[in-house]
Image (tube, rainbow, N blue to C red; front, side, top):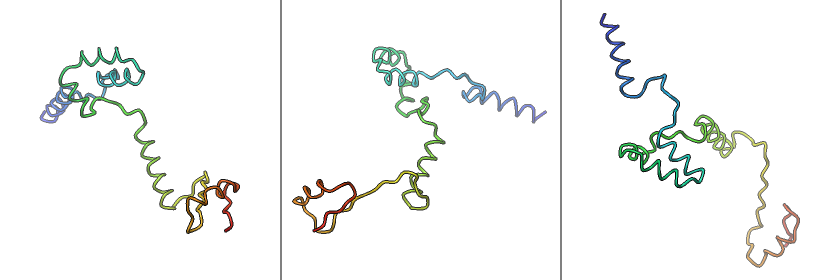
Amino acid sequence: MKRALGIVLLLGTLSAAGCWPFGSDEPTAQQKFLEALNRGQAAQASQIWLRMTPEERVEFSHSEGIKPAADPEKVQEEVIKHFMLKSGEVTSDVGIEQVMPPAGGSLQDIPRYLSQPSGAVPAR
């Protein structure tokens, strides 16, 4: 009996808090506002902003009610991949060649660097 009452109270609390797992997928006012701005529809964004409640505006200023454009898992994978490449643990499929000028170069050496083929270091 206590267990059933506890479950009913938990479900009531979740639904009252807006955390119901079967909630609607309708975008929030904050999301609609941001999408209108991204599409360049300033007039529509202005109307959405004017219809937002003060609480919704505060939530917008705290980035609440907005879905990220990129998948957070994909972003995390890309960040991990970036730092692994930077640390040298994994080699990249794409090769980037950096040409280092010889030590002691100056601005007067620029014409020699420009006349050389890509990747070649001019002789002194």
